[in-house]
Image (cartoon, rainbow, N blue to C red; front, top):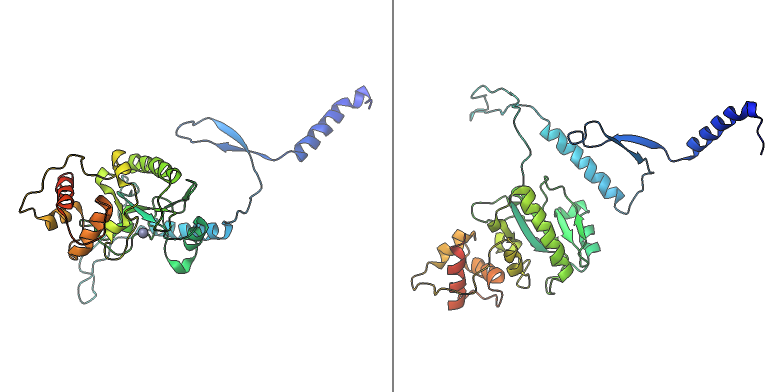
Length: 303
Ligand SMILES: [Zn+2]
């Protein structure tokens, strides 16, 4: 096509407008202002794709917004006497120095379900009232389902040391496993990567990586005797007994030793079974053999 020289600038402008109107919209987005205060990057504003979990993601967002309302409250504590009258004056004065609370424990579970799809469904139905921060599939894929700073409903009623509300101070990790099969290498590899990140991010002590069975010995059997606690301990997540074991003394107070590790010994048999499922992994009876006692004697000194 030949364009008259006189009209060429107008033609070029027309082409430019046409290209701009047909191209994806480009939006300037500020990057992390603390790191790059002056830099901007350009990203395409892509259409919103509604994934398979769109509806439950939407409920998650609504719930997040409602929790945001709670943390934004700036009201003083109200202290009343037994007659319902205000017993002492109080006032809200916002401090300028605070942050968000972080988890200090990790509780590991098996899902006791037949598939990852079943578990994801369980954790995205309100009526089940259960969840976990993370679920690890058989292929090692990690599903992050609750923000680390939120309280997920994974541990329930139980006691470990003096901790009774474990959900409030822990992260829950569920591993896709029906409860009677071995955990596979892909799952353990992903778990170790995840635990390393969580331990570092939240400064979680080595002793504070436990199983659901440890926290709730009367109710829960997971993650069970097939879980590789020895591998976890070798990587700094929980403890494991030494290879060379000292003989436990004749008068060894095993009940106190179990309690010092963290077990709730009000039901001693349940505590012994949970201990053996975690640290001995050969049977689930309530008897403590000399080997079991030696393992316990070795371990309680680490806690
Ligand atoms: Zn569990």
